[in-house]
Length: 234
Image 1 (cartoon, rainbow, N blue to C red):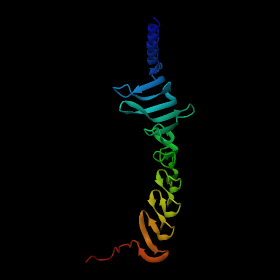
Image 2 (image 1 turned 180 degrees about the vertical axis):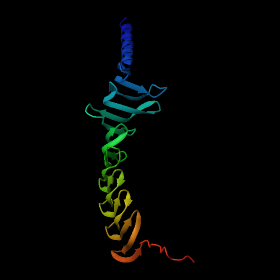
Image 3 (image 1 turned 135 degrees about the vertical axis):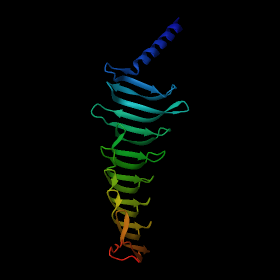
Image 4 (image 1 turned 90 degrees about the horizontal axis):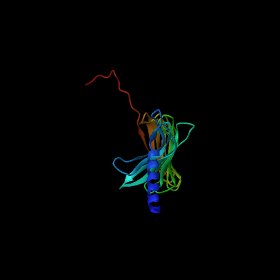
């Protein structure tokens, strides 16, 4: 008799639980706890809670790997704005990247990590339109800066620097709204200058100088000479 009562209670509990999921309010908006499976399976695809159509609290998203749900992302919503704190995971639960999103748009600072490591690999910033905007840093696994640049409305703008894993500057460019424009310098791994010149609209311009062991060895002129419109064709 006790076993029969226990079975009935379990069945009722499961029925009540299923009835409390995936509900709508009187206006047809999703409301309460929601849980969806991959089509045709019992493998959960996402789970979270809505308040009259708005996501609230923590949402979890999964991959279907051989019939097993594996956490791939989380979104933490709040009641004050439409932003969510988002974290993406590898299959081994290691964090791949994290930052803020508005819908599918990246906003503010985003962090990316080296494979199977907690070491920061990339730090970049996005504006409200989802465009890269501000400083961007790329790091070696030892934490040393590998690249440093600046973006404006999704385009490289300003000085961009490259370093060796030991922190030696090896390359320096200047960009203007996505184009190489300005001084450029190149160094060897010891930090000795090997070449320098000017770019104009993505092309080498003027006199470029090339060095060996710190001494000038060659100069090349990349000045574009204008054609004489009055010169007769032969």
